[in-house]
Structure formats: C-alpha cells, structure tokens
Length: 269
Image (cartoon, rainbow, N blue to C red):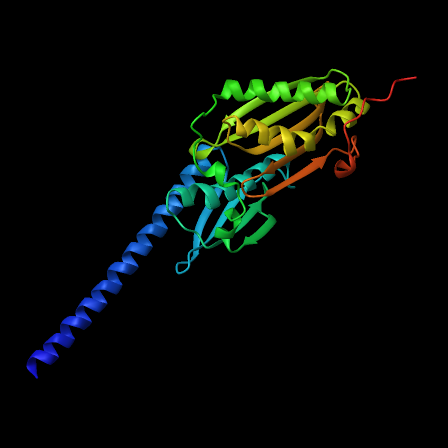
C-alpha cells in the first residue's frame, strides 16, 4: 500500500515536472523566435516597431512596422513582404514554427493604415517548387545569373521586335542561397514603356525557370519601369516561392498589365 502511494506521488511529480519543463521549452522557443525575427528584419532595414506574442500554444504573433508616410508606399509593400518571408521561410528554416500572425503597418503619425491576419502559415510553402529547397550542384554566381538575365532580355527584345531600351539587372542574395532578380527599365517615352511592360510575363514564365535550371535559385522577381528622369511608372513583383505578389503604376502610366503583350512601340508621327 505504501509502495503504491509512493509510486503515485513519484508519477505525479514526474508528470508535473515534465509539463513544467515542456512549458519552459516552449516559452523559451517563443522568446527566441521573436528575437530571431526582429534581427532578421532589422538586418534588411525593415522599420520594426513591435513584435508581440498574442498566443503561445499555438504560437501567434503580432508584427508592427512603420511607414515614413501617411499612406502605403512601394517601400512599405516590400517591407510587408519581407515580414512574410521572415516568418514563413527564414524562421521555418531555423526550426521556428509560427502558426499565425497579424502584420500591421502604422503611418508616421502612429495610425494604423494596413492590417492583415495570416493563418495556416505552413501551407504557404506546400506548392513551392521543390527544386528550390536545396542548393543545386551547379550553383551559379551572382554575375553569371545577371549575365544570363541580360541575355534573356536581349533574346525577348529581338523576338518581339522591340526597340532598344536602357535597363539594369541586379541579382541579390536572400536567405539560404536563394536569389532575387530586379530589372529596372528607363523608358524614353510612355509608348516605349508600354511595349517593354509586355516582357514581364515572358521573363517570369519562361526565362527565369530556364535560368534556374542552369543553377540559379531565383524566387523573387521585380520589374520596374521609370521614365528617363527616373520617375516611377510601373512596379511589379512576384514571390514564386510564397506565390504572392502585387503590382502598381503611376497616374501618368495607366495600363492593363495583364492584357499587355510585348509589341514594338508605335512610330511617332
């Protein structure tokens, strides 16, 4: 009888102790992921105001960033996207699992101007290209990827009989050996800008996959069109890993982007 009671007490003590240790481990992991995300975002110059734990089991966060304006700008969109990649990609690659999060943007007066609640965070990578999850054996350097991207642009320019235009290609490193490809165009006229805009989808749909087959790991594609003075006309970006993106244009450059096709600029009278 005494042995039975003693065994029960030992069992209860071990159970309580195990639960306490488990709770401590989870709380410590929660603290670690908050510090990790803040460091990850600050490294990318994202203006983080606050990262708060809303729920511990399952882990739910609130991430607040700040705009330099009173409205959502293109820089703000990039920062909000950086939050997604930090939570969904970077944190998971370091074995931190966030189940859901709220991302909030406040303006320079402290007023909330954007709020999005994201659930089922792990589902975001279900449809990602599995070839992008491991480094290729024939990995290309940044310069090699930029050269290939320029070649593809020249090929498409010739294919669609487009006039020559000024552009710049920049490849940047993301987390875990992934890359972003940014193409910036300076259009001499609005008509030239409309013609060049039609290259976005051939680049995204065929050129980038072909470059990745040769050893790149491009998951983020951004295409910008400016006028000769550097004024913004159009911006488009897509994250093929998270399968999210957006685009915008200036009032001076109205366009139906998804109805746009590459075409020679009309001849001037």
